[in-house]
Length: 218
Ligand SMILES: *Cc1c(COP(=O)(O)O)cnc(C)c1O
Image 1 (cartoon, rainbow, N blue to C red):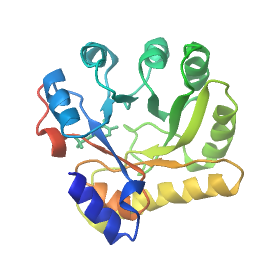
Image 2: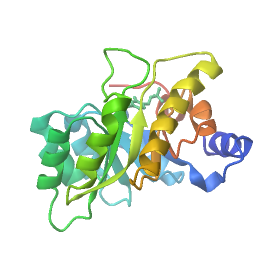
Image 3: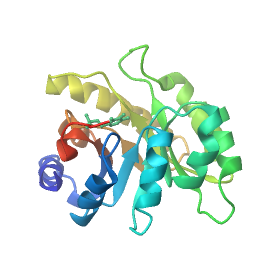
Image 4: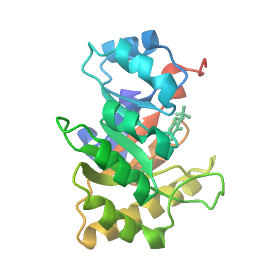
C-alpha cells in the first residue's frame, strides 16, 4: 500500500511524504491493527465509537494516532473529544462547538476536517460548497479545535476521470478557503477504490480500509 501511494504521488509530481496513509480499521480486530502498526502504519481511522473504544484501550501502549471518520451525533462528542486526535467529517457548527468545549484541558487542540458534500447523493453528509466558508470561519475560531482542512466522500465511480472530478471540486473549495484567509493544510479524500485519483488531485490524507486489511469482519 505504501508503495502504491508513493507511486501515485510521484506520478502526480508530488513529494512522497506529502501523502499520509490513514488505515481505516472499522470491522478489524485489535490484533489486525497491531500487525499493521508493526508494519509501520501510525494513523488509524474508526467509524463507530462503541467499536473503537476497546481497541483504543487495548492498543494504548502503541504510539498510534486515532482519527474518528464516522457520522458523529451530538451525544457522542464527549467521548470522541476525549479519545481521538482527529475528527474528519464535521458538517455542523454545533458538533464542532461541543467538541471544542469537551476537549480535555491537558490535550492539544483537536484536529478537524470539515466534510464537503460532493456528488449530490442525499445519503452522504457534508455541507454545500456555498456554505463552507462561513462554517470554516466559525470552526476556525473555536479555542480547542485546530481546523486542518476538508474531507469528502464522493460517489463510487469506476471511471478515473469521473473520480478525479469530485476530488478536483473538493480541491477547488480548499484553495478558495486558503485564498480567503484560512490556513488549511489537509485534504482528506480517497478510499481503497479511488485513492490514486485523489492523490492526483492533491489529497494529503487517504483513508484506506479494505485494500490494507482485506474484507471487514464485523
Ligand atoms: C469505510 C470508510 C473508508 C474506507 O473504505 P475502504 O473502501 O475500505 O477503503 C474511508 N472513509 C470513510 C469515511 C469510510 O467510512
